[in-house]
Length: 135
Image (tube, rainbow, N blue to C red; front, side, top):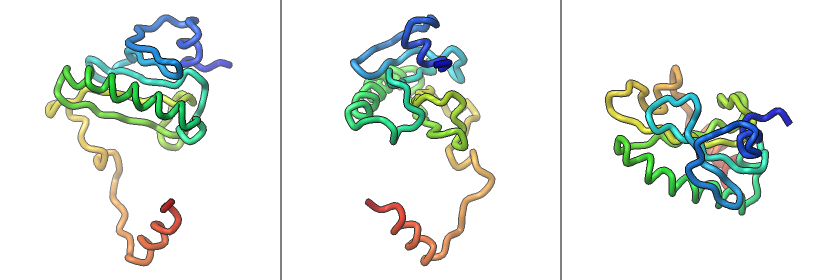
Protein backbone atom coordinates (compact mmCIF):
# COMPACT_ATOMS: atom_id res chain seq x y z
CA UNK A 1 0.00 0.00 0.00
CA UNK A 2 1.26 3.45 -0.85
CA UNK A 3 0.02 5.21 2.30
CA UNK A 4 2.46 7.58 3.98
CA UNK A 5 0.96 6.87 7.42
CA UNK A 6 1.27 3.11 6.92
CA UNK A 7 4.90 3.67 5.94
CA UNK A 8 5.46 5.68 9.15
CA UNK A 9 3.87 2.92 11.24
CA UNK A 10 6.01 0.27 9.48
CA UNK A 11 9.21 2.28 10.06
CA UNK A 12 9.81 2.97 6.36
CA UNK A 13 9.60 6.72 7.07
CA UNK A 14 11.19 8.11 10.20
CA UNK A 15 8.99 10.07 12.57
CA UNK A 16 9.12 11.55 16.05
CA UNK A 17 6.82 9.13 17.91
CA UNK A 18 5.38 10.50 21.13
CA UNK A 19 3.41 7.51 22.36
CA UNK A 20 2.31 4.18 20.95
CA UNK A 21 -0.51 1.89 22.09
CA UNK A 22 -1.67 -1.49 20.81
CA UNK A 23 -3.80 0.13 18.10
CA UNK A 24 -2.62 3.73 17.70
CA UNK A 25 0.42 6.00 17.46
CA UNK A 26 1.05 9.70 17.96
CA UNK A 27 3.86 11.69 16.42
CA UNK A 28 4.91 15.20 15.48
CA UNK A 29 3.44 16.42 12.19
CA UNK A 30 6.22 16.78 9.57
CA UNK A 31 4.47 19.88 8.18
CA UNK A 32 3.20 21.60 11.33
CA UNK A 33 0.63 24.37 11.29
CA UNK A 34 1.84 25.48 14.72
CA UNK A 35 4.63 24.62 17.13
CA UNK A 36 3.56 21.32 18.71
CA UNK A 37 1.22 20.09 15.93
CA UNK A 38 0.71 16.37 16.56
CA UNK A 39 -1.03 13.59 14.62
CA UNK A 40 -2.73 10.61 16.24
CA UNK A 41 -3.54 7.71 13.91
CA UNK A 42 -4.72 4.11 14.07
CA UNK A 43 -2.07 1.53 13.22
CA UNK A 44 -4.47 -0.35 10.94
CA UNK A 45 -5.33 1.41 7.69
CA UNK A 46 -8.86 2.84 7.71
CA UNK A 47 -10.06 5.73 5.58
CA UNK A 48 -12.91 6.84 7.86
CA UNK A 49 -13.69 6.72 11.56
CA UNK A 50 -16.79 4.60 11.00
CA UNK A 51 -14.63 1.94 9.31
CA UNK A 52 -12.77 1.33 12.58
CA UNK A 53 -13.83 -1.16 15.24
CA UNK A 54 -15.14 0.11 18.57
CA UNK A 55 -11.92 -1.07 20.22
CA UNK A 56 -9.77 0.82 17.71
CA UNK A 57 -11.87 3.97 18.16
CA UNK A 58 -11.66 3.76 21.95
CA UNK A 59 -7.89 3.31 21.77
CA UNK A 60 -7.44 6.17 19.28
CA UNK A 61 -9.49 8.66 21.30
CA UNK A 62 -7.91 7.61 24.57
CA UNK A 63 -4.55 8.47 23.04
CA UNK A 64 -5.98 11.74 21.65
CA UNK A 65 -7.07 12.65 25.19
CA UNK A 66 -3.66 11.83 26.67
CA UNK A 67 -1.66 13.72 24.05
CA UNK A 68 -4.05 16.69 24.06
CA UNK A 69 -3.13 17.26 27.72
CA UNK A 70 0.51 17.63 26.67
CA UNK A 71 -0.20 19.75 23.55
CA UNK A 72 -2.50 22.00 25.57
CA UNK A 73 0.47 22.93 27.78
CA UNK A 74 2.07 24.78 24.85
CA UNK A 75 -0.50 27.58 24.39
CA UNK A 76 -3.42 26.62 26.64
CA UNK A 77 -5.79 25.59 23.82
CA UNK A 78 -5.79 22.84 21.23
CA UNK A 79 -7.74 22.47 18.01
CA UNK A 80 -8.72 18.83 17.53
CA UNK A 81 -9.59 18.18 13.88
CA UNK A 82 -10.54 15.17 11.79
CA UNK A 83 -11.19 15.31 8.05
CA UNK A 84 -13.40 12.25 7.61
CA UNK A 85 -13.22 11.61 3.85
CA UNK A 86 -11.88 13.38 0.79
CA UNK A 87 -14.74 15.88 0.46
CA UNK A 88 -14.19 16.86 4.10
CA UNK A 89 -10.61 17.86 3.25
CA UNK A 90 -8.84 14.58 4.02
CA UNK A 91 -5.60 14.62 2.02
CA UNK A 92 -4.24 11.25 3.15
CA UNK A 93 -6.90 8.49 3.08
CA UNK A 94 -5.94 7.10 6.50
CA UNK A 95 -7.78 8.24 9.64
CA UNK A 96 -5.77 10.90 11.42
CA UNK A 97 -6.53 13.32 14.21
CA UNK A 98 -4.77 16.69 14.18
CA UNK A 99 -3.89 18.25 17.53
CA UNK A 100 -2.92 21.85 16.80
CA UNK A 101 -1.95 24.26 19.58
CA UNK A 102 -4.01 27.45 19.22
CA UNK A 103 -3.61 30.96 20.53
CA UNK A 104 -5.76 34.07 20.19
CA UNK A 105 -3.15 35.62 17.88
CA UNK A 106 -2.82 32.76 15.35
CA UNK A 107 -5.53 34.16 13.01
CA UNK A 108 -6.96 30.68 12.35
CA UNK A 109 -10.45 31.50 13.62
CA UNK A 110 -13.37 29.37 14.69
CA UNK A 111 -14.86 26.48 12.68
CA UNK A 112 -17.62 28.72 11.32
CA UNK A 113 -14.98 30.88 9.64
CA UNK A 114 -14.14 27.93 7.36
CA UNK A 115 -17.48 28.25 5.56
CA UNK A 116 -18.93 31.09 3.50
CA UNK A 117 -22.32 30.96 5.16
CA UNK A 118 -24.46 29.04 7.58
CA UNK A 119 -27.67 27.27 6.63
CA UNK A 120 -31.09 28.65 7.50
CA UNK A 121 -33.37 25.66 7.99
CA UNK A 122 -37.11 25.69 8.58
CA UNK A 123 -38.58 23.78 11.50
CA UNK A 124 -39.76 21.01 9.14
CA UNK A 125 -36.28 20.75 7.55
CA UNK A 126 -34.74 20.53 11.04
CA UNK A 127 -37.23 17.80 12.01
CA UNK A 128 -36.51 15.84 8.83
CA UNK A 129 -32.76 16.07 9.44
CA UNK A 130 -33.27 15.10 13.08
CA UNK A 131 -35.16 11.94 12.02
CA UNK A 132 -32.39 10.97 9.59
CA UNK A 133 -29.58 11.39 12.12
CA UNK A 134 -30.94 10.25 15.49
CA UNK A 135 -29.90 6.83 16.70
